[in-house]
Length: 111
Image 1: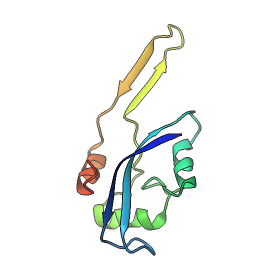
Image 2: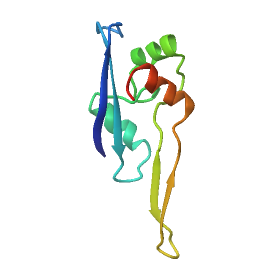
Image 3: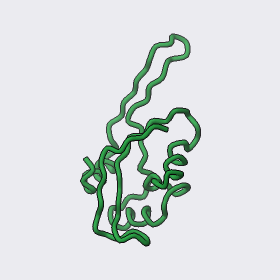
Image 4: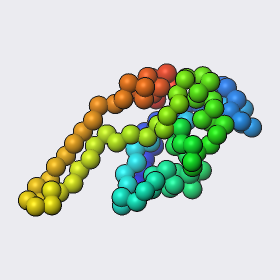
């Protein structure tokens, strides 16, 4: 998995045993199509994806539910690219940001 940090934010609110809440907006690029690859890799790096109930941080997930009403995994594909099997033509699909995701990015000043 390739990753880069687009923006970081720290809130003066405690999360779990930490005195502040720290969040980052990341760009992740999977190198294979393995199930839960991004979720597992980020958890291994101690930067779990918010809202991930399997590999994530329960204190951060609880914080997001209580303060922002977020109850879903905050992972989304913005672009998919692949070659069509019969023609070899490159196909690129792009999706707009989900409303809930956009609202949280704005609320956390990560835009």
